[in-house]
Image 1: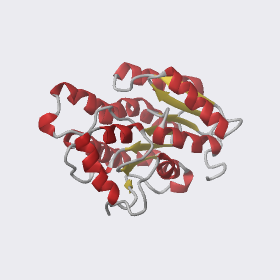
Image 2: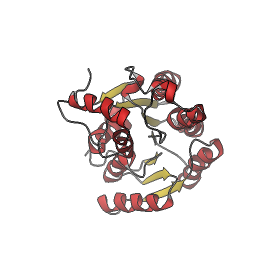
Image 3: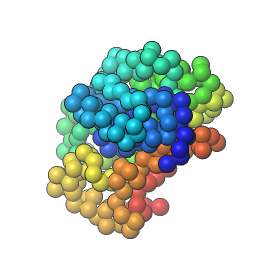
Length: 258
């Protein structure tokens, strides 16, 4: 996809040792990125992700940077590591989340509120607070956030998840206005149910969320998307082909909603 679209670019992808993040990292590497940095908490998963990226694009340079991005100092360290090694970050893809299945608000443990808020939203702020000023200084850059249609369409069981994804969407839209004069673009991809991901497995493991999302899947007349169906849009938005696109939140959901 897009040969040479990312020639010389430095890309940092958070929560990217699997799923949409890893699928997008492979496209960056195949498109000629000078370096692709993937992030997660598990070093073993990170090593496997790096091997997959380099196997997909022989000659590509990929590295793993460990860190829990819901913790501000760790998020800053991850971003600063890339900036110190490369001197710039051209692409930031944020694919954060929290390992908590959808539940009705009345059944949600208040002890999990912070985990959901940080995983889905605050981790993006922490990374952007380091990377976006660097992009402004260099006069160019692209931020792509992976949010969810839950931030656009009210969904039972996703009160807090949906609220945080809506926050991501509005943050992207507003930030795009603030930084466009510096040549920095900010966009958002909003999937719904995504097969072959850890999130999908968690949803289907819970009776409540499985029944809810099986109904949604039945409306996906084009089929329930997989990470490889989402990644091309994320890569496009990060590329020069989307040089006049900013502040947008674009759904990829197989036709579940319009």
